Image 1 (cartoon, rainbow, N blue to C red):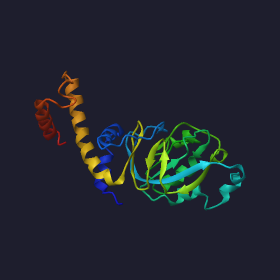
Image 2: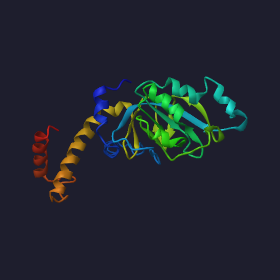
Image 3: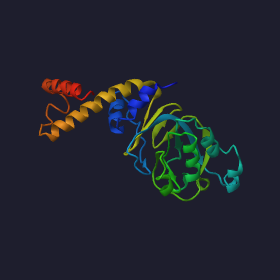
Image 4: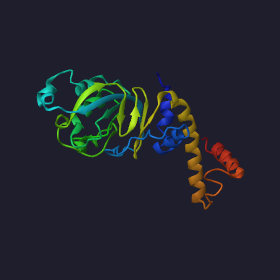
Length: 238
């Protein structure tokens, strides 16, 4: 499913918290990836379709360092085949004890045009990854190779990352707080509604800073506040 670039642009200006509320209104309560945070804040959103990699528990006879010599090793192959503009999302079984990837692989993903990378495990070389322009999200820094605990087993199938269901092509949005997964078929309507919600939230903050009570304002149960918002939106081209 192809997502309109206008939708992606809208999502670049909406917080994960606002998107979570919009999805909650549609009955989706588990789309935020848990226990994952930016390696370093970027001050802008990561947005792109999901390209996935799934790890499974490692079995010792299959997971020696020699495996990395295989050009079709799923971890390496995922880095080399993730389409430009996509976010590589890794189901690392919530295990940060062994690294999902390091700065060399992530640099390669960035150079190939990746929009970002997410794991519910950890990254090695996190200090270097944090300096990159491309956003990256993980649990915490980790040094041991992933072979000690995980085996990369499947590329671009459905996964669970931090308890969030992720299907290839779902839209991944990350801000300086966290990461959320938007089902692809809902992306357009969620982006539209959350854009309106963001505008109203900015209006509310401005009103509260000026001394307004939140009663009748947040949520908007007073029609006078809706009229003020309409005028504010027109003045601010929002």
